[in-house]
Image (cartoon, rainbow, N blue to C red):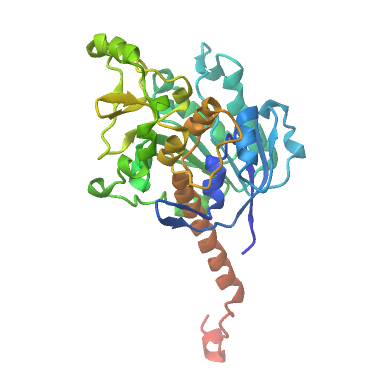
Length: 348
């Protein structure tokens, strides 16, 4: 089968791209290679790019997406990216229009510009659940409208990582665009692979050796301070090892007990996750290299990533659609036209 050519924006350390390519293992489960080939990847974070380039044969370019000239990009079938969403606003115009509060808010439009110029067959965009309610629920419909104006039929769905063999309750919105209506009508989002009673437990990805290292534990002073305001602040969210972890984020790099980030409680003492545990929670395989950057940079990159296993299921669903279309086209091409006999011809 011919490779499906891909351009990757906002690539980070490569969670989305790894899931798209496949060919890795997680918790004893194999996620086979998929027929996607990344022709071009880009991110403006030096440390995330360093991690990316430690783990892929192709290279990720260190560059601001605003500096891309769409016409210069390679032709591709699929555009992917998790565009930043913190800075959207609804401009005070009549009618209201999608605007931005700072430079990050412009990045969505860079993705739109590429779609308009290159017109790939598909795109996949990922974002936080909060995008659905941003600007009193006005931003999301306008974002969908911008994608439609670029020439795409849109499907979107809020997916939870814990439904797909990942030990984390991470809800993200996936937006998929299709240039042709047939693909749009036939695409189906992946069916959950783990039911509520059989979801992967956090304890399966925790490093027991880390329990022996004081480096990962909070000081008594930090714990006492948190306890004094715990009822008021609702912080210090210790995790149940028998359940799935709360969402981890880039905040892990600056985590304190007064943050909303998940922590562990081991023998009455609080500790944070190691970078490798954070990667495990995000479903990165064990052989994914983290050490090219500092631990704080590892936390940030891993926390910002799309879980590879989650992306694999999305990519596999798209692959199944493409395979089905190709088989139908071949069937039509090779099917011989029916030969009419003289009686049938006379009665047409």
